[in-house]
Image 1: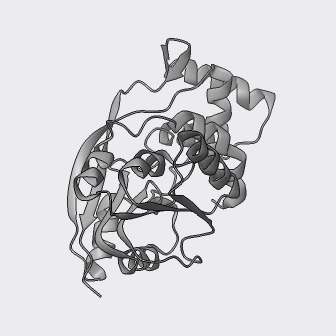
Image 2: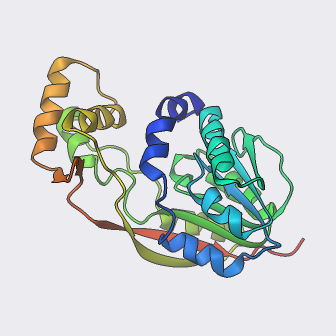
Length: 249
C-alpha cells in the first residue's frame, strides 16, 4: 500500500484515531522511558496518534510517514495543540534519512512492509535506548477473512504476525520482550453504506451496485449499532508490544 492509497484515506483515518492514544497500552509503556530530554522517532506516524500524545512530554518528535496528506494533517494538529517540537518527514522509512533518537516507536506498520528485516534493522540502528514495535496479535485480516472467502471463494494469503516479527528480530541478533495486551477496537462506521465502502476497498472488490447491496446485507447482520455508529461485535482485541534496547553504537 503506497502513499496514494493512504492519501485518499488520510482524513477518515485521522478522524477515526483522533484522541485514542490516552489509555492505550503502548503509550503507557513509552511514557515510562520518556522524559523532558528524550528525543522520539515515530515511524509510520500517520496523522500523529502517538506523536501528538507524546509531544508535550518529550524534547522532540520526528514523525515519518510515506503519505504527504498524513504529514499535513499531523502538522495542522500539532499547530492546534501548540506542539512546536514535532517535525514531519515524508517518505518511506526505508528511503529517508533521520538522526538517531532516544526512543523509537512503530505502530501497526510492519505487516505492510515487504522487507521486514531491512526495516527493523534500520529501526534498531536509528534508536539509542528503547525501540517499540506495536502490531495486532490477530491476523491482520481477522475481521475481513470471512468476507474475503465469501466474495473470492478462497482464503486470503495470511499476513505476517508479531511472532514473525520476533523471529526476524532474533535473526538480526535482537532479543525483544513480547507483551500481549488488550486494546479497544476503534473501528466505527457512520453508516452501513460507509462500512460497505470500507470493506469493499479492503476486500479489493469492484464498486458496483450489486456488490454494495450484498456487502450492506452481510454487514447488517454482523456489525452492531452503537449510538449513531456501527462497530464490529468485539470491544477489545489482542495486540503485541515488542520492546528491546538496541546495542550501543
